[in-house]
Image (tube, rainbow over all chains, first blue to last red; front, side, top):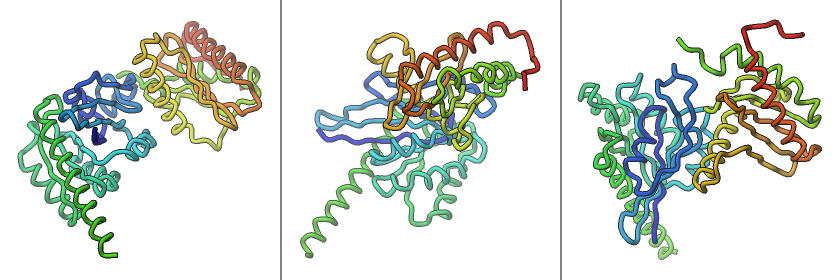
Length: 192
Length: 141
C-alpha cells in the first residue's frame, strides 16, 4: 500500500484540527489543552503536540494527516512532523490580522515541503472578507516569490467536500512532483 | 477580564513556595517549572541557562502526547510522564484540581523513583497551598 503524509499548518484558530476531523475516516488523535491565553485566540482549547487522522483514497492508497500546533512556541513539533511529510496544506483565517503576510511567512517556514511535494493554501472564514482578498494572495505571493506556484482556495474547514478538494489538489501535486523527480533521476542515470 | 493562568499572582506566589522545597527533596534537581497545560511557564527555579519557555512548551507537548496514548489505549487517566535519558531525566506530574503541570529535570545522580516521589510531593504541596490561598502575601526573602 502506498501512502502520503500531509501536514496541516497555519496559525492558531485557522481550522487545522477542524479540517482533519472533517476529513479523517478514523477517530482523530488530538492533543488539545485548555487555552489559557484567550487574548491570542478566543477559543477554549489549542493543539499542543499534533492531530492525527487517516483517509483511504482507495484500496492501495492511504493519506496520513498530521496537524501541527499553530503557535510558534511549539515550532519544535513543526520540524519533527515536517521530516516525514511530503506536502503542506496551509490554512489561514482570512479575517485575521494581516492574513496575506501570515500566509507568506508560513510558506517560507515550510518551503522545504513546497520543494518536496507542494503547498496548497486554504482561506478559511473567507465569507467574512472581500472577494478581492484571494487575488491579493496570488499577487502578494507572486511578488514575494515569483518562481513559486501555490494554488489558493477558499474553504470551510468544517466541510468534508471543501477540504477534500484542497487535499486532493495537494496529493496530485505531490504525485506529479514525485513522478517528475523519478523521471529526472532515470534520465540522469541513463546519461551516465 | 480574566487573567491568564501564567500571569495569575496566586499561581506564581504559591508555585514559588512549592518549588522552593523541591531541591531539598531531590538535590540533583537541575530545573523545574510549573506550566499551564498549553505550555506557558508560570514559575521556574534553578537552571538559568535553560530556556524556561521552550522547556514549558516541550513539556506541554510531551504531556499531551502521553495523555493521548493513555486515552487511545484506554488506560484511564495518565498519572505522570518520565523521560529517562543517559545523563538525566525529566519527570512531569499534574497538579490535581488545577490547570497546571510540574515538569522537573534531574541529573543522573538521582534515582527516577526518588525524583518522582519528590515531584509528586511538590505538586501536592502546591495543591495544598492553593487550597489555603486567601490573597497576596509577602513571601520570605
